[in-house]
Length: 529
Image (tube, rainbow, N blue to C red; front, side, top):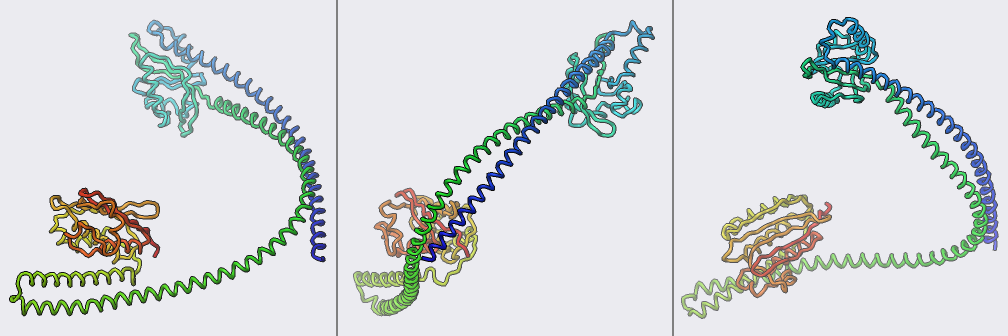
């Protein structure tokens, strides 16, 4: 009974602490609500100040725009005065003096240039704006004051002037003698001679950098004002949410008290369940130990069985080969001593016996090779294309005799059992050569493609083909199809291929149509060394 009393007291203490913590949270939320109210008032004041500032900027911009319009009117009047045929005014010194004074006293840069871009005149405003004296500028190309990235603008202006256009308020960028770049507004007009032909270009450049900055400041102020309004709305929403949260927390406090009572009951139940679970785990651990012991015993039995099977295969093949050699030797002696005494039938029987002993010897050797596949093997990283070319070199005589055309695509480098992979490709190539069509040149194509984490290899030929009913059977040991009786072989080559592919944790299958050819596919993952 002592343990439940301690547990109950502990839960009561937790409940008291939860109440205190909740009270502290409520006080903090009340403080936060008060802070939000103060912040909202401050935000309203800041918005009012920004609105006043925005009004001032608008008034300043309007005033600046008015001044710019007045200057542009004066510039246009000046340009128009230069366009007019001035032949009749050559004697009017007072007029030209007045005109020169206007040009020299202008704050704007007034420049004239030839059609090929050579500067012809350069007023005081130009010297002040660009930093070059008239002596430094006149006679040089207009690109002196044009940044390289804005040369296309100058070409466009020249094209429009040649079309007899007057360009006003063309905003672009120019550079000063010290390399500084700044915004300008250009008014550009054609200069004509008495005959009305365009002989040059007049430009009035006004520095609008400060206006651009004011415009940017106004845009920034408007964005900031919009941002502050959004923040004000967010703050108001936060205040509403905080009030709702405070009410919600009070409700949650009551729920928490009820939950603690339920939690105490649940804790007792869980302790009982844990006791049951512990007993189940003890039983499961004992069962796992027993299963592991069984697996170890079966693994040991499998190792022993494999060793016995290897030993049996070797002994069986050796013991079977010995009497075959004896029969073969006696048949040779018999053939040497009594061949001339035998009639045709006897000689036929003798030949059948010799063929049968050779075939039996070949089957025993093939069976021994099949049982040895995968023994004492080690994974090695190899170039599959080199492996295939080595096999082709080994089969050179057979390939030339059959007049086979073999094409090998790009191949990967993989971790494989090198000897077994050589035998795999060798068996498939020999199989294609063996079952070729007599009236058609044999074509063999070997390719590979990566599919997910595996490589799929394909060996295709245009031979006699295989009926679908035999697709599974051909991979079984010593299985020969009815049509195979006219071809040499022992029916173990494809069984070897299947065992080699399975040794590499892959799979092998065939696609074929009679008289149209066969494709053997097999997959091999890149095994870890």
